[in-house]
Image 1 (tube, rainbow, N blue to C red):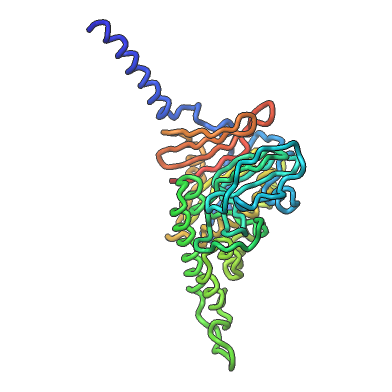
Image 2 (image 1 turned 180 degrees about the vertical axis):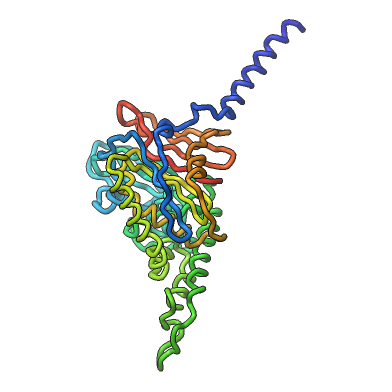
Length: 387
């Protein structure tokens, strides 16, 4: 009995170490750059509030290209599984895996450029048999072999090919509530459900303004009468699509989003110009007085590339999120950005290329994309969502 007690203690102690590592939430779980962040005074317009985040450090991100840049130049090609033909420029022979027909949750991407490509979860690509959204942050190497993309459909119902390739002409980023379902839940049905909720909320926002402003003229139907902020034709068009991208492109929705983003852009640019010596790298986002999201990048240049589509996504959240307007303090934003006490951590890595960590806390989920391409690894993008 005395001899069996020691091994038992060793097993119990080893188990305690494993449990402690999963739940400790010590400083080792903090992304490397968070201590360098400083939150500035908020900028508010209507239901949307953003807190600019500046950092004492910056990294060289000039070698990276974005998905918008790659597709616009033609050097990055996205296509359905089964349509992979001449998407690669001639390079040394590569043994491709056998691709069958198109699949809802898989696309193939080839990066023909001489630069590594950044993919952000939430970026929408339109075309193919259905519009899709990138499911996770990752880096694709320069002159890559075909890469299987884990994606989610954001156009429930269509399975008819509109193009053999995909495009990002609308530069659409999912709004935070939908983006969260793709990143954190990784559940297609939940993504569809959230897209449906968002589209319904957009239609309701338009319909609330859609009282005819004039009596129809002879030969004119009520669907074409101009209304305050929208037309009933806009509402009908919005109700008639299951595509998230098309809902966002609806001219009345676009106008409402722009009414939020334009003042925000001007205010943000004004603040940053006054702080030329400070390095703006991200934002903490609140809607109706509730913090919902944060995005931080390795450099102000990288933030600038994504800023227009990110701001549109935040404004769409403000347009569709239920609730009443409340105030929000800078202290609340600071607490959100400083809390990285994780109960659980999941790591996904491609050696020598990137590492992605998912941190799960009591009231948040966070994702850290780290570039491993340089001699000194650095955080390329951090996203954090209120759970």
